[in-house]
Length: 196
Image (cartoon, rainbow, N blue to C red; front, side):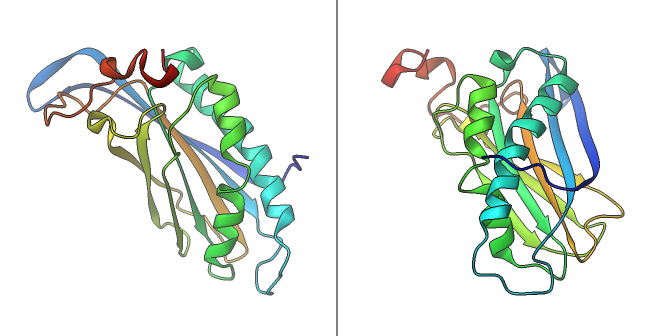
């Protein structure tokens, strides 16, 4: 069962890319990350059972996905790529980020999107307030679509405090601008292995 964490703040990072390399895009690319700054209940003290953080992850998977997709102003079906990441404050552990992201955060993300057969890429680090975090991105249904290997960088100047965690999810409406290194295309995966 999902348990709502103590959220100090919600921060949404949104960008619309209209051109790159001097060439206009046919359709602007939207990228968005939603991040929650939450209290880490296990900061400063080792705890064997991290179930509470797993429950927080389940809540945040749905909550942050909804906030990000709404901020992009799109239907969930228009999402192409996704990713997740955490910055744990200095009194926490890498395993706190793992508990938040890996056991339960992904299922509500996929449920909200109505898709997401691929692995959700992730990153984690321990850092002081103001650290940057590169949230990795992959195509939501096929991890071999090279055009969608990307990231979005976020930074919150006053987070995480030593006893906090920044939890972020990210999405795009397409691959990198003017992707041209070959490989499987997003269009090429339609109809394969039940993907449509």
